[in-house]
Amino acid sequence: MKDLIVVKIGGRATEQLQTDFFQQLADWQQVGNQVLIIHGGGREITALSQQLHVPAKKENGIRITDLTTLELTKMVLLGETQPQLLTQLFKHHLPAIGLNAADHHLIVGKLLDFEKYGYVGEITAVNEEFLAPLLATQIGVLAPLALTEHEWLNVNADSAAAAIASLLQAQELYLLTDVPGVLKANQVLPTLNIAQAQRLKAAKIITTGMQPKISAAFQAANAGVKHVRITNQLSATGTMII
Ligand SMILES: Nc1ncnc2c1ncn2[C@@H]1O[C@H](COP(=O)(O)OP(=O)(O)O)[C@@H](O)[C@H]1O
Ligand SMILES: CC(=O)N[C@@H](CCC(=O)OP(=O)(O)O)C(=O)O
Image (cartoon, rainbow, N blue to C red; front, side, top):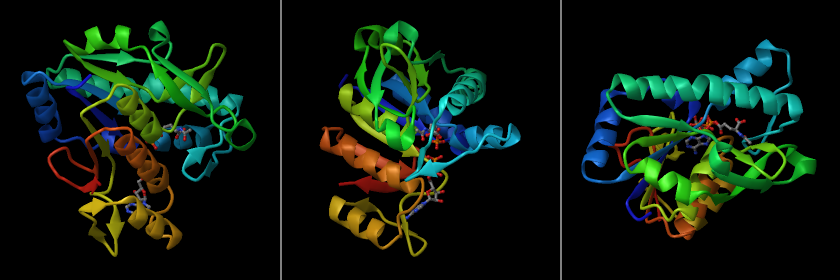
């Protein structure tokens, strides 16, 4: 889908969206781009886990997901984060549709590493035939989950967005987060290449949730997505992956 723009919004970023975000989506629609939003919800999943006294543990920014955590994750993503975002789009008069992996087996996945992470997956296929006509008239809002033939899997939202952008050959991928880009000594790096990223990881300057975000960004760039950015605003360049 050569005119597709994929936007990933982290859980906290969803709560801080400004008017210019919605205006940009409207402008893209106006000029004929398709827009697919992949939403996160990581902080909300952790908050509900704590409320219910379910241990919440992440490894390299990836949630260790047993069956209880998987159920809780589906509840938060499909019952809280997604409707919250859809409501905001509705209030800004943007036509949008909420989507999940089970709609016509939209998102197919496989286990990442069961021993290490439990029910965590990576995305292997997207039902483009089902999705493309929907995105012709409205903004898609998709939760980061996947389905095998038998079971649901929890997918890190950054890797979900990157895999989907890659599989659909999107034009652009925006990884929107709560920081203005990849930071080094409190400055946003305007560009980032793979060698720099590896050095910054080794020096523990890139840590926690920024690690899967960077891996996802390079995965998409290597798969042919031309413009990949990490930023907190659609209108700001943030860090461009080169
Ligand atoms: N070098 C870095 N530059 C910017 N943020 C970083 C860096 N290293 C670690 N981080 C952390 O990564 C966080 C963004 O990842 P995450 O919390 O998973 O966000 P999201 O929910 O948007 O995916 C930042 O808030 C920051 O705490
Ligand atoms: C496997 C895995 O880590 N899944 C993530 C899915 C949500 C997510 O990634 O949300 P953010 O983008 O807001 O962090 C999780 O359970 O937190």
